Image (cartoon, rainbow, N blue to C red; front, side):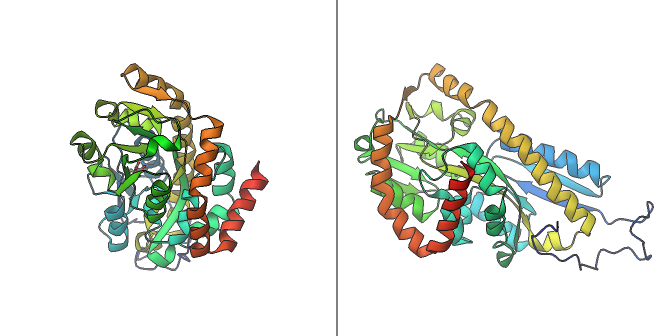
Length: 337
Ligand code: TK8
């Protein structure tokens, strides 16, 4: 099977001067560098996955491609890093689908609240034909999507009150990712949402600019949000995929063999990252309680009420994005169960 992602393998500027039959072991290979940046810190499974990618790529290219890794938003937030890929100031970033929707609006489908019932179903849909269909929309934006990784199910924290029902969202100032669908969904739940880059979030909670935020337990614990937040609820309202993005200009400049290597490494490192992410999840919740946060369980009835409240927002976005593609995602989810 051919790897999609455009490219076509016609880049000639890197071809060594001597004609190679493809198998020559001694050819002079141009040294290339991948600058890879993420928003999370170096204790997060996403960074461990990125280190795995580095190890695989450097080993399999015999060092012809070097991978430099940056964490904690050292290269910027998700939006600026993605723009960096388009402009050529960096080669890799791994944002959530929500900020990607500012480049390719269709990606908002994956951020429909209560869409994916489990991580396993998400894997099947994202790693299958439907997931590939979305990756195929990226080259138009000078981006190549090599693999889906996992941010995970998002849960609500805040410093005002335990949240058990939609009623408890009333008036809470919640930071959302920079994505209109997230903003409208939180408004529908009764909250007072503010979009903000991830890199500004900790300070905003500390200073009380916002009361709360929503992210998977791993992020909440490893970014030490328990230092500035008192309550956590298992709202599990959205499953956030990560997309492993590469600059298309850079990808096109790789040899076909190198394209295969980076693609395979992104997939393998992604499997590893998903595993690490899932392994520690329950432990992180226990750790948060250990640190003094209250934990509130969302009952099935309370979740059902939230589903009803956000439904009009989903209908609006399905129309905007295209009912066909939304149906396709829903059918794939149905089939995966
Ligand atoms: C990290 C982000 C983050 C995301 C968010 O760069 O912004 O809340 O969940 O983890 O992608």
